[in-house]
Amino acid sequence: MTVAAVIDLDQGWRLDRQVALRPEPFGALAYHFGTRRLSFLKSRVLLDVVERLEQHSSAREACRAAGVAADQLPRYEQALGILAEAGMIRPKDQR
Amino acid sequence: MTAIATAGNRLVDHFESGLDAPICLTWELTYACNLACVHCLSSSGRRDPRELTTAECKALIDELQRLQVFYVNIGGGEPTVRADFWELVEYATAHQVGVKFSTNGSRITPVVAERLAASDYVDVQVSIDGATAEINDAVRGPGSYATALRAMERLAAAGFAGFKLSVVITRQNARQLDEFKALADRYRAQLRLTRLRPSGRGADVWDQLHPTAAQQREVYDWLVARGEEVLTGDSFFHLSAFGQALPGLNLCGAGRVVCLIDPVGDVYACPFAIHDEFLAGNVREPGGFTRVWRASDLFLELRRPQSGGACASCGLFDKCRGGCMAAKFFTGLPVDGPDPECVLGHGERLLAARGDAPAPKPSVDMSRRRPRRARADALAVAQAAPLPARPCDESPVAGVSIGRG
Image 1 (tube, one colour):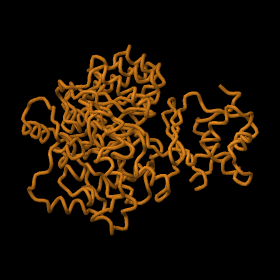
Image 2: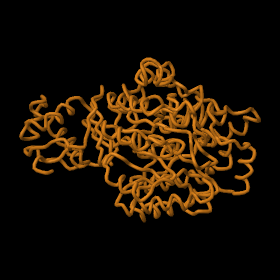
Image 3: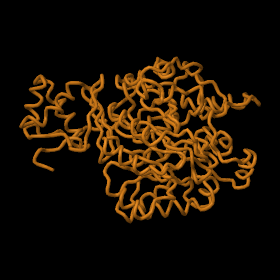
Image 4: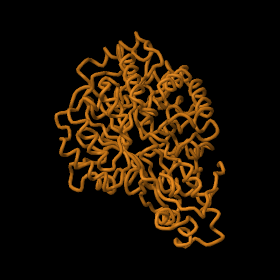
């Protein structure tokens, strides 16, 4: 698997306006109506993080609020990086 | 696109045991069609008078919205011949159900093209089964190539980038893959290649149209080289047995993550399985589509662990998973054995041994009245061929992996 760019955890992020999330036992499905791409969030914790992005000023805080332990942070940093690359989430200061 | 589901990981297990709602589904809105493609997977032609009404279609869309089905692949028949087609498309997109529809292009006027280009929630798939008029028209009918190209020109002129050019690979067009790609590029479209199934009228012509074993290998090599640029609807997973897995889930999604709703509301396991054997129920029954999806005996059965049958001892079973259920069924092969196009040739040997035993016929045939014999003869003379297909598109493996690397 290709190693995706990680995101800046200290920046504020949010779900793209055209993305819908559907919770599943394994995590969630994310569908982008603009690019028509489907992504899989492979854990419920990751779903929790993504859903919390909007209300926190940084991705790091959203992770903390979702109960992500410090040693797990790099994995979430990478997962969020893949989501950012797919256009599923974007920086808050970007339309 | 980042592929994250690798063989044996937990995600695939979740899909095998089924989801609470399909990821996407195919909805044939009508069996009416102004073409009569020789390989039509739904044996379309005439309208069924029992078609779902506009109100019933809208109620179904409401239900799909509640289930969070992200999008539907609308086909037919030619869906745009329904008088309420655009009304239904607008209704669906206003209710967070995205639409991708397949068309032969005959009704894509410049005005329609403009409207489509303006919507983020509608995608269009123009079917073409030959990169040249000669090869296309032999299967899809005289003038159908020009019609499809005109539609593509209009979509491109309206600024609709990324619509789909959908091709069913046949023995006659298998050598045209580069030309199809060039054609798609010319209109800023994305190429979508799918597998010919012996479904609907396709059963009558499959022997003449399906790619040879050597062509299958060439198709596989081409997909490995270009796989990230083309869509396949995950339809060539039986070819993964040649080597590396192709992008996609590499699993039969029938009744697990996809299904088909036909014009009269019958729910089948997949678009290629219009037969009583694969009929799970009807959306008009109490409990509607949701009950069919979650509780029908057929779908529950399809979600149980499969043994692999005659393929269980094959070292490649983990890759091809025994191939396509519908392809086996409609060629008269056991559903728990090898695919008729098994890359090791096991299917071919079974086909040769099957003798004259009749293969199952589709339960629905809305072909315009014309003897089957005449169609087969027409084909023999024309010597060319393909099929309108639309299984679930978009390889569903794009994504995010956490912890599995």
